[in-house]
Structures are given as C-alpha cells and as structure tokens.
Image (cartoon, rainbow, N blue to C red; front, side, top):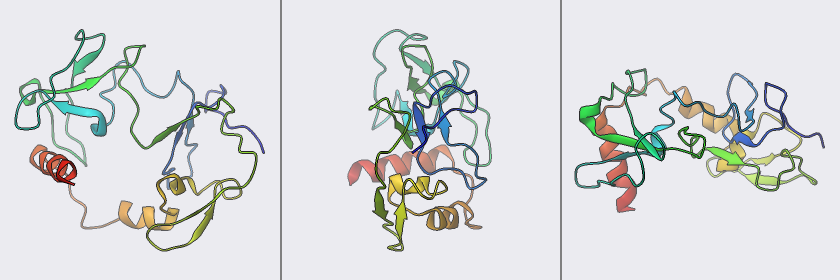
Length: 173
C-alpha cells in the first residue's frame, strides 16, 4: 500500500478519522495539524470554574491557554469570562481534535493488510485500505451514516449551556 502524506508534502502523522464529506485529504503532518493561534477543538476544552471544573496545571501560555473564540455555526462566542481553557502541546499549540488518529507506528498510515470494520449504525462492512473515502470507520461509522448526521437539517448552533449539558451527560455515563 502507499504511504499517506499531508497536503504540504511531508509524511502524515495525523489522520482525521471521520474524513471529510468533500473528499479533502484527512492526513496532516506534525507541522500542519494545528497552529499556536488556534483554539483547538471543543473536545479538549475544560472549564476552570463550576461544578465540573478542572483547574489548569502548569504555566499559562506554555502548558495551557484561555479559550477566546468568536461564535460560528456550531457554537456561540466564548470570552475570558467563560473561564474555559485548553492544554497545549510541547510546541505551544492546542492538541488536535480527539477524532484524529496519531501514527504511533510511524509508517505514514501504510497498512500492510486490508482491515475491515463493521459500521455500528447500519452494519455495513467497510475497508480501511481499499476505499479511501471510509475514514469514518475509525469511529465504527460508515461515511453514509456520518454524512446523514452531518447534514441533519435539525442541527442548530450549540450554546455554552448545551456544551455544559453534553459534558454533564457524558460524565454521568
């Protein structure tokens, strides 16, 4: 099988497991995965105050930073008053989304044999190496099921209250 590469041409170290419905390259190198200016993904954000508070450890600006973000179609604005923070990697960047797979084997995602996975939603069998559009299989969900959720017309922008409820529900399970 062929090794995978980032859009910049460097060997891939990260793969966005769900893939992109647009067919964009889901592979990134360590240099392109995130930037110092990024706030990272909300899956890595923590609250410094409140019932489920996690106090940041280390030095602000080196080990963690406050999340300040303008609102978008998924989440309303976040300000310093919201007291949300994110851990930083050794290069001072927020860690990538939890949906990224890291190439721990250092083989640029060069799979030696075809791996098949069953979709948890519909039961379809997916191939990791033959069908390059099936990156969602890392989450045991086929591309069709993932896109059905992604294109849901009832999906609305989440508020910080929705985010808190989601975190509370997840921790209760």
